[in-house]
Length: 290
Image (cartoon, rainbow, N blue to C red; front, top):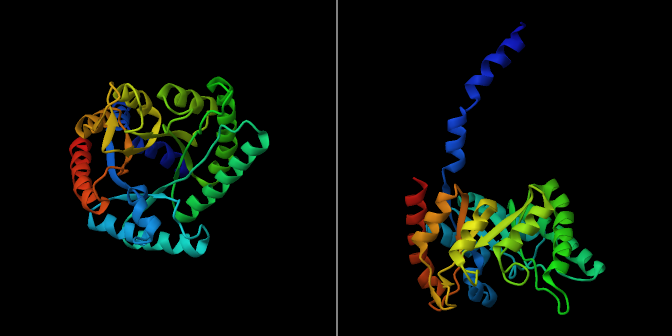
């Protein structure tokens, strides 16, 4: 045996984890705190806050990363994205995701092509910001069309977008945002049909309209980003305060590794409520990452 072969054969066992350790790694959660810019939609729209300000607040509130909802960006060109990326890095905050609008249920092939082209552009924006994830919407089912008819259109758009996303290292997360993505079963069906490592689920814990905890649990194994809401609908359709301890416990039990981003939509002023809520979320992520 020559020296190179000897070194290769002797080093492999040293670096390989035993199967028990590999299983433990898969099931052990690693939860990080995130802040979704949509929480400050009023302030960003009114220009009383900037995206730089959101980064500053993340530092102040000890938040690990930011999900950049793109709706109020003054530009998507490098003159905006690259300084923001540098600023976030220097502040020790990861821009890990962006959130965009999309409508992948268009019946017209030309309209679907436009949706795909739009996602191509957002993939470039995510890449410029250093983000590895994009939250996308499936869209509403057009009148006169069944969900079953619309499913292949969503799958087509995601497959074509995934091919480009793969070249940039960006994952597309399909969110339970209503429309064709109202129920976990349908979302998982479409994600599985796309059959790409670059397409997964963006789980919003407050968006399911019925059997919320059951559907959250169903979606978790394929979730790569999670947005946490203050409120949710209970089984009677009543809007109630979400039991965060129960939610985070479920997430941790699935072995999830990634961000839990607060997306604040309640009535109290975000600048007053979000610091308090981020402290609660941070405590829970630490409690269940242990």
